[in-house]
Amino acid sequence: MDELDSAIVRELQSDARQSNRDIARKVGIAPSTCLERIRLLRRRGVILGYHADVDLPALNRGVQAMVAVQLRPLGRDIVMSFEQSVLALPEVLSVYTMTGSDDFLVHVSAQSIGHLHGFLLDRFTSRREVVSFRTSIIYQHLRKTAPEPLPPAAR
Amino acid sequence: MDELDSAIVRELQSDARQSNRDIARKVGIAPSTCLERIRLLRRRGVILGYHADVDLPALNRGVQAMVAVQLRPLGRDIVMSFEQSVLALPEVLSVYTMTGSDDFLVHVSAQSIGHLHGFLLDRFTSRREVVSFRTSIIYQHLRKTAPEPLPPAAR
DNA sequence: TTTGAAAATATCGAAAT
DNA sequence: ATTTCGATATTTTCAAA
Image (cartoon, protein in one colour):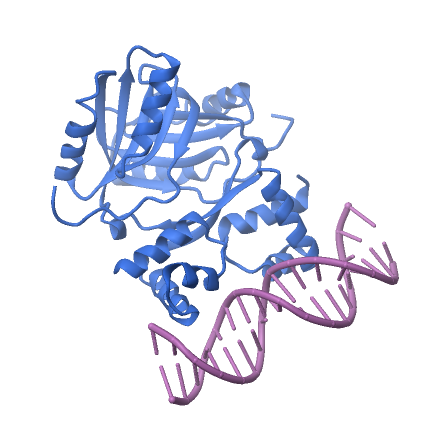
């Protein structure tokens, strides 16, 4: 993971669909070298995948919310089964498992406030392991598409 | 946004770097048609971009946290300036602006717990508009890379 | 939407730096 | 280790049907 790898990763973060040739030119190496570097980054698990970022309203998902969930008892099986089954629901975008008074944050999106409400009533109130949940509507979600490597040593 | 567009979007969500030709074959149309559809999806703003998904530990970002922030007063200028300046910090991955007792959730990652602590002390305690913030360490973040379109009508 | 042809690109091996 | 070159396969791209 040298400076070259970082530069390649940065390019693929900002536009994953540009040609290998363009990336090679921008970072200043031969296309064959670039191709091999990208393959290694993929194989080493540095690059996990390439995904189109899609406008949520265009997918009929105009309303976003964050649901803070408390689960009891907090056994391994119950936690893992909750994570997996919740992530499998169409409305769910991601699941954060965390410390603190809430055990999970579930990022969801739905067609409307009404659909969101129905979804929560159907999928969360019915779960016996869910002790409580609080829902916050998301006005805006700003995401950084190309997080940079952080410096290793000093501060 | 017909069934064909959905199929193309789904392919680009799951692997944004596969060739137009492969996508065309999978969804059962000619490559030229597929190319034109992709261009239109891009121009219409359905597809916002293509981004490599990078392993956070490989970027020296082994520790993730969610910071719930309260801001006062909640004027437009203060809110927007907070969102932008926070997102510009290297450690910040995304900012959720929301309803509820917390005004923002800031998703951050850092080299270590120590770095995270230092970052929070330096960048949040010093802000006069930040009334309070609570930090939760994220054990795991499961993200759905290909959210599907939700059905338009019934429930 | 498709076909077909030209241009651009990806891919690989081998040799060179 | 990386690069350059060359040769081939694949892909993109666009004009025309």
